[in-house]
Amino acid sequence: MEKKNSPLGYYIIGSAIIWGLTILGCAFKLKGTGCFPEISYILNGAAGVHLILIWCPLGAQLKKRNKDNKSGNNQKEQT
Image (tube, rainbow, N blue to C red):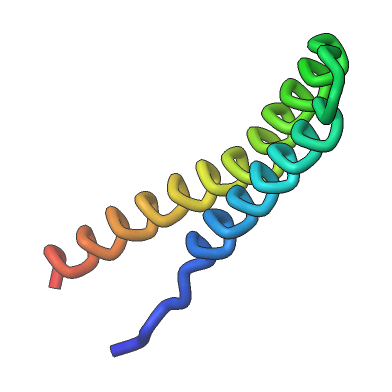
């Protein structure tokens, strides 16, 4: 029985790092000021990067995994 390594953990860690850096960036920017527009750009940029770099590849991988599982189940049923 083969053990498949899933990169899901890497995506979750990457997501946490992106949002951690975003929170730190906002904290440094807000230090002593009330500059909402600048913070809005940081948060919107981080959300966009998060969707593009983390969840799009993850969705593609999960779709591929589901397709592989379905084809594997069909092969088992035929034997």
